[in-house]
Length: 415
Image (cartoon, rainbow, N blue to C red):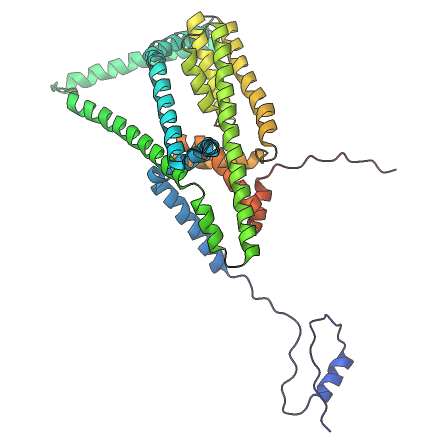
């Protein structure tokens, strides 16, 4: 009499030796034993880890190698997100997209040209005063270091004099033994052509990169939401998938545009407040220092510190008063703190609330990779990464790592 074999179920059942023997006796002769329900996991292979490490190194090398292309591309994308609300507003007034984009770009170019022309004299004055400023700082540091010589300093002075005398005696003895040999030192010749060519190459490179950024911004603005429509079309024929994709893309675009608008507004506000404070103090070239403060505000932690140091040094060299220099530096730091703490948080909400460790690591990484441009772009890049990760389900872990830590609830003592 043949009995049906037992069927293994995925439920975890505790097995005893009696149950195993009964199952073996019920299994027909010559037939395979039933499959065990225990799932066996393959050990983690080191090949996947090695491939991940190699892929990361390849990505970092590619970012470094293609930085001359990627930096203008990132700047163009950020500028397009910043200027897109103006284009949309013009479109709502029944202006064609091409005319709206052209008008916005012409206005931006004219504003940049006017600002550069009005500040060129102040920047040139600051650059011309740098050698004198360095000399004055050196003299001040020398005066501050001088004072009544201690016993150790006197011993060091005597030792230095004895060493000089000993070296001179040794040089005279060696010169008496060996015949003098004439050596002609020819100074390097100054070639005006090489100097002009280097300056022209640098200026041409800056003009070329600026033109590339403007053209990329123009074409990104001109494209509008065409890329969004293409991505929705690629989501598949399902209407639900298209709605989900459209909602995700709308959320990403709205968050990035709001952040870029906040960045532009806060930097302009900080530059205006810094200019007013420096004008009240009486610092020369206050406009150039205000623009520098607005640009350096993009660099977290180090930017406001650099601005305060530069402003304090300029005030110290102009007024020769330490109290006025400290007042100017403190005013610069206070303005940056107030704008960054209250205005930025009020305008962006949870978007700008980043993990401080992630912000600092991003600053170090992009600064090491792309230099000054990397330091300026580090915060917009990491904010965009966080916004995209928040709206894509598979990247929620990345958004959680970049988000700010929640405040700790006070612990209650148990009775």
